[in-house]
Length: 320
Image (cartoon, rainbow, N blue to C red):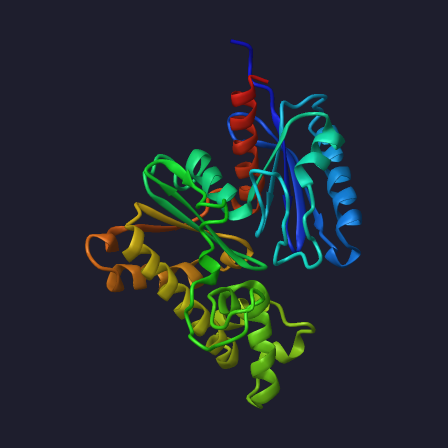
């Protein structure tokens, strides 16, 4: 059997674009990440993405790949290869990203929800390796999710299953960009952690180091909370409370072997994951409470590695 060629992986996030060449061992080569600048619109962003992809190929010194994997937040139609209206990319309606990618790189391409791709990446190469039932939550610009059920990737009836970020954690609460109120994403995403902190600063005159940040970002909140800032701690404690509630509910419903947390907000480490672990251990029903709760192994590269796993599967199916 001839050696398996590497693949190219593209990740389209609301904050950043990321690309890499990935080899069958899950290692990335020529990894690049740059701001999305979504205000420029889909045509310019996609041109930037493809340029980044070609630069990854050059940096990895790879002349040929067998396929391209693309990860992006939903809603999307993976079967048709179309971005139907991603919530984190306003105005991106019915973008035929797979066909555009095929033309740009001259090889087959495949599209998947970013968190669905991420759970596959962690299952094949990372913290969920070998688990029959695994859940993944990405806590970043938004909150997404993915699941492995009985060793297989769960996509849902129309390919958009696993929207864990839109679990209701505060009925009637904050407005989410999906149009509903009280979603997990409206409280625990990096965007909304920062927004909640700014709202609290505007209505509360207590001193806080956050008043020296412009603009306040989620990492400022976690750092200040860790240092004992009272206002920041209030925002952070609500964040971990709603995340703990959502993860505990998911554990009770699906009884996974492992729950993996990834995304930029998880850089806060123990400050985020310890309360979630404690909540699952004490609040989930036995034996579900034995689920392992851990941080992602693949870090900032999880979505590109997951997209690559899908590209390898596509190449194998097509015998490329």
